[in-house]
Amino acid sequence: RGADLRYNLEVTLEQAFSGSKAKIQFPTSIVCETCDGSGAKKGSKPTTCATCRGAGQVSFRQGFFQMSRTCPECGGAGQVIADKCRDCSGHGRKRHTKVLDVNIPAGVDEGTRLRLAGEGEAGAHGGESGDLFVFVSVKPHPIFKRDNLTLALDVPVGMLDAALGAEVELPTIDGGQTMLKIPAGSQPGRRFGCRGLGCQR
Image (cartoon, rainbow, N blue to C red):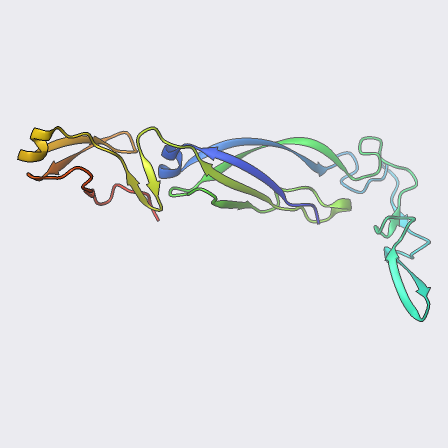
């Protein structure tokens, strides 16, 4: 099986709120197209390793114990390649910069892990590919602060409006506006809520 890969993706709070797509690129190993991952030159095939007889392991005695280790001849593959593919030097894989579109679900938070099955390193000799894990971080926002699903912002209110009551217009994270009623006699630091304008679950 190929190795799993990690990619760190930074998104804006707006992207995290509404969901979006992000194009990412990263170095990885892909199956060699010339030999289809066999590592052998076209027209030839890998042969069973004579040392381990295809097991990939060789046995040896150490005192009273029967031990096994990776075959030194084939490196554990169980096969040897006499006539190697020129494009991948017999590895069956080659380096490549992969470009992917990643779907960012609405409501992702700092540290969210997205798994993209089969998008990791290609497996050796036709083996299964690993997975790509995308770890999301959210950029600080100049206006809004996030606490789990709640979005908060500071609203400056004049002393007269706080004393007598007023309606103020607030920005929303999706680019709109909403009205908030400030009751008469409101004190500094008082918190008000606007239902339904936070992040999705």
